[in-house]
Image (cartoon, rainbow, N blue to C red; front, side, top):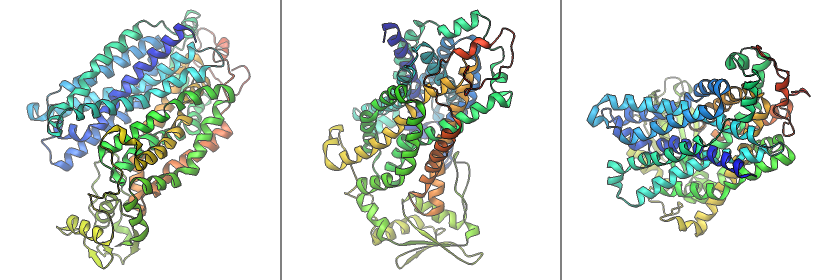
Amino acid sequence: MTLDEKKIILASSLGTVFEWYDFYLYGSLATIIGAKFFSQFDETTRNIFALLAFAAGFLVRPFGALVFGRLGDLVGRKYTFLVTILIMGSSTFIVGLLPTSDSIGLAAAIILIGLRLLQGLAVGGEYGGAATYVAEHAPQGRRGFYTSWIQTTATMGLFMSLLVILTVQSIMSTADFRAYGWRIPFLVSILLLAVSVWIRLQLSESPAFLKMKAEGRHAKAPLSEAFGQWKNAKWAVLALLGLVAGQAVIWYSGQFYALFFLTGVLKVDGFTGNLLIAWALAFGVGGFVLFGWLSDKIGRKPIILGGCILAALTYFPVFKMLAETANPALSKAHETVNVVVIADPSDCSFQFNPTGLSRFTHSCDLAKGALSRAAVVYTQQDAPAGTAASIKIGDTTLDPKAPSFAKDLSAALTAVGYPAASNPSVVKMAHPWDIFRPQPFKTVLILTFLVVLVTMVYGPIAAALVELFPTRIRYTSMSLPYHIGNGWFGGLLPATVFAMNAQSGSIYYGLWYPVVIAAATAVIGLIFIPETRNRDIFAGDTSVHPGDTVVEFDPNAADY
């Protein structure tokens, strides 16, 4: 690898790490941000708006892919991802300066949501630009290795955000952090922005794009050319269903849902949960480069689809092992305590609520929601129509609409063997070096396995997507399926899994969501997605003539 090639990878990767760092800061600090910018509302409404602002960043990512993908195919890769990093960096820095609702009222919430929308749009444009730029500089036969460095960036961004937050928390009191310390990670980002922009300004435009533009072969209307006709758009659909959907659910399961499972289901404290995930990321992050390199040797499909198959086969036993290790007392209660929800089936809703706007007020919904949040395993017994729901725990029967329901539920669960909040068996870390104690170490090994599966599906994905589309519409074509997959299939995973768990009464049932999608991706990818590792990604562009507005391309064709 030459010095210039290292510089290209470093510049593209650092900028993308920074953008993901920005994006994840909000998720990690959502509770505090909700209290600061939506304080005029009651706690429930405040949390709804905080969740909405977070979800907005995910939901607009595909639109960012369209906007900046088109721009990247029209004016170039370099200038487009300079724009995206400036938008993301400025938006993040402004959050650190933004007055709270106590100072400027509703305007604080409106500005915050606007900044989140800008961040989501910028992330939607960043990935395709960075991946395309690096791939178009990579020598033939090494695209998997080169682009795998881009694949480390989301994980490194998450790792960096956790590290900065934990560092700031460790040097000040909890009260000070909630009062003003939460701003520090956002303000620090201005230094990262300056370094990232400076490095990217040193880069030249992609030689493939310059050559194509000089010959008059660049797309005049990238969106209509890529998606306006089914014969072209079908490859974006196949890329979504045969590569990205499975990659997305495995990525979100292995990093984000694993953290939620630890803290929200297994009741591990937030500091410990973040440390455990940080260690697992540190142990597993090299897998991105390893599997990217390996995909140059044996192909993209065997590794990506192999990761999907392994996830589908192992998620249930691995998450069960995680529960038994991280909170053995809770896991034992799941096996020994019988809890029954007695309810009219028509009174029970499917509690899918990704934006937090829905209200579940039926007695069955209240019962199931409370039990799911308490990580209780239960069964449902059908009652006659019109019967109000109740919960039977041992010899105790509870009314979910009673004023003292929350207190009574906690007491009843503790009485039959569910561990109290002070449960000493739950994994706990006070310092990073507590990793060397048996329980944390075993927990991290399990989490590292989940991260390795992430690296299998994510390490080669950029190369696979770049190789699937021609240069003239590559930025546009690869960005949309990537961000629909990761923004929607992946971003909606936590809400979907929670709703499925609440519906079934199991803390594992929701895993069917990533398992089924990963298995379906493996089947679709195996049948319909061509192997592309030996493809000359510029060869098919020689048949494109100046003045063409719609070009049919077939990745299975020999002259692609």
